[in-house]
Image (tube, rainbow, N blue to C red; front, side, top):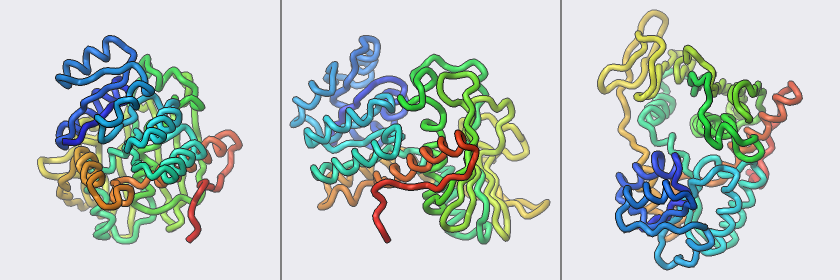
Amino acid sequence: MTRVALVGYGMAGRQIHTPPLREAGLTVTHVVTRNAERAAHAAEDHPGVVVVSSIEELVTLRDDLDLAVVASPSGDHLANARVLIDAGIPLVIDKPMAVNADDALEIVDLAEHEQVPLTVFQNRRYDPEHSTLARVVQEGLVGEAFRFEHRWERWRPVPKDRWRENLASEDGGGILLDLQSHLVDAAVQLFGPIDTVSAVINTLTTTADDDTFLLCRHESGVTSHLSATSLAGAPGPRVRLLGRDAAYVLAALSDEPVTFADLADADGHCGWLWRGDQREPVTRAESSQADFYRAVAAALTAADPQSAMPVDPRDAVHVLAVLDAARTSASDHREVEVITPGQRPD
């Protein structure tokens, strides 16, 4: 049994982390929350769970834990990570790892110095839709890829009343840090590091940004067009990948509305290969977000736990460097070079 502490039991802790943890066979034994309602939810969801009110109290129980999962608001990640690493507790940090690349690098450097295993919850890498797309790229099904379009577009003209909508971007709020963390990570995993970015960032209904578009130029020569917005009455297709031989189009994730009904997937299929007026379905890859936590549990028993972790935390530093550059680009109305702090030379 892998004994897990969840730091935070809001939407992320309860709805996003708990299901894959349970599916992967890990056991939530401790929860950190000061909220009485969330403490009651934790006791209901995890019989026998120990609920503590602070991360400082949690680390006094170090010997009862194998892993801590930081599912607190993004602006608290750095402070939480410092305490957990100082206590020597292996940890998973929800994306984004921090609110900027410099803070993320501080976490990585501290974990390396203290030899504490660290990884980042980039759960969307384990969606079957992403696994299918990765296979399309790896097998060259579109030929030489040159443009990647990835969208996470919602229709929320009345925003939710949560910290993500109510906090300023420097405190962890906004859609740039939230959804673009997923989109940029996917683009980098598929096509390599990003060299420059041009961005448009709007704040229309919330305290922080709620409408973003990034044009990213990869070192490989591919360009990624990444859109995350809360104000799309008609969301575009989730993915359109253009190559010299074909295009791959995915209408939506399985739990999303499909704007263009003709693009909907049939059972066992995940997107379409298009060649002009001809198309063929693509078989859905087998993958689950629980695979992330299965890999974490396996890494904790490996001879070198850090090298066995499913997500290299330095990937998250690069993602945040892209987002930092995007803010500068949007403010200055220009293309900006991405400078990733702590990047190791080739």
